[in-house]
Length: 319
Ligand code: AKB
Image (cartoon, rainbow, N blue to C red; front, side, top):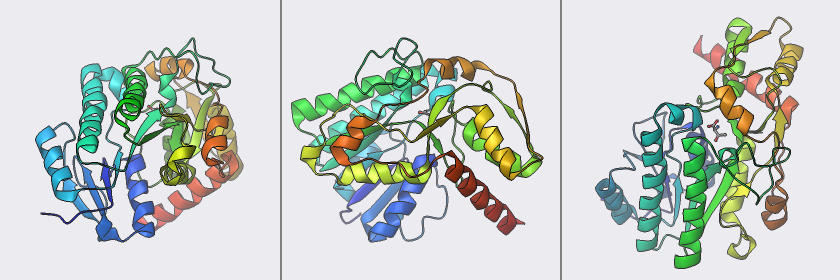
């Protein structure tokens, strides 16, 4: 039996969830934070943690009943590349999980819900440079279809039921504490690990494949700024484009080579290239900037400096 908590994170041990947990742990009384995931991840300190499958509706319902959160972050999802290898499982997790959480949030009077969308909502016929906030969308991956459908469900629950659900379309997220799992933008994380471990990397995207990206600190800050913004400032109830930087594997490799001169890269594009070709090169995030003051802080150089310093530090601690 739990006493009520302020914030519930569902999917707290993934790339985004684990960093959000750390950020919230610093900002609030840890006893007010409840985290769940399919399996335990890192050290959660004083934060309460339960293993939970968001597709287990009874368990989810029981969790809402016991913890009565005010804010809920639903971060459990299957990403683009993994989703293409198991489309039905991706659809089930990404859709059924969302609708269950939206229903329970209504029933338990949750004040604010956060759900992540992605640049995967765009497709080959969408404007790519930049992707506009509201335009033609034709996602070709199951992940992208689930994200676009999820955005419409979020807006539906807001319009019809008044649920305060907020969302961001994340670009590729670059972080060092955990590895991303199953995305098309994962190369931009793996490359740093390999650059330090073996000074060489074989990239699954081609040299000139430009994609929008964001450093994790900006992604977390943006998420919390969106969640803390006054309700009347949230004028987009599907999901906000979130821009930070964009680069190609070739440009990222060159930045790494400035810092590790022996670093080399080869290119061996695989099925993820087809996905990357359909995604935007840049995003137009003027709506997020205008509505709730979004402004990124990390560019490519700052991201490289921070990633290499953090990963060098963690590998020297491990030695
Ligand atoms: C992926 O590559 O699938 C994700 C995303 C951009 O949503 N990182």
